[in-house]
Image (cartoon, rainbow, N blue to C red; front, side, top):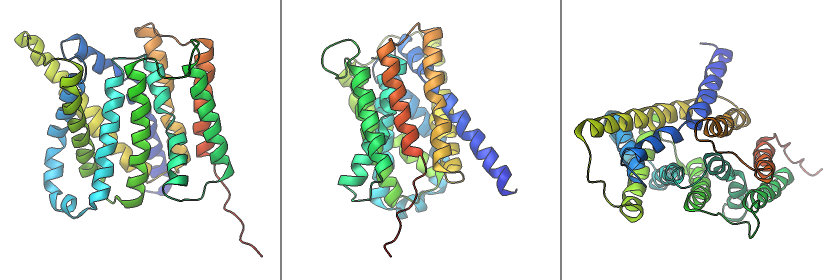
Length: 298
């Protein structure tokens, strides 16, 4: 297979992943409507992903055992971050949850500069300022302090920050292949959900057998498609195309999420929230914009 064809396939996978994750809120809320409220729905979804990915992880168990412990922790932390994102859909508006997650370029720039000591181009600093401005505009749209207004927004904001830490660690230390990496990722999400589930909601107790089977089937399907297949495919695709293209194609998640929430859940954003969201997306584009390497002194 030639390079152009591989690039086309990888781009299509990335675009499809953005569309799929833009609809992720639907099964999460469906499970909540059927008794799996709070983090319980995300817990059964991620357990479903573990079941699907377990054979791959078992086949590559020696590779996992030889991997960097810090790299494994970084992948698991990414799963925990996605768990917060998943749970957040039950406590906030879909579009805002997704947009707050998209602030990762701001956190990534801060972490790279002040913790990792990596050089920070001026364009990345501009992206950070634009992103923080968008955040303030979104969260201050209703008046008052520009702070998250509900648990879902806090979870998405914290999850995006943890995701930035995770991706920095993965970039520095992880060499794990997509299949076993997806398993470790799902394991981190399971652990996070298991901790949060009894804190947020009591243990679900009353189910009709037929309804319970339907819910578990939905959880298994969601775990297999979103947490298993789509993430493993995305990990395969992202190493084969330019990071800027990955980021731009994944922005379809915002468009699909906002449009589907407006059409199906009647959730809309105010003018100021839309303006703030636009700035957040602009920060993402600036973060992905190619930066010329600094010239060596004569």
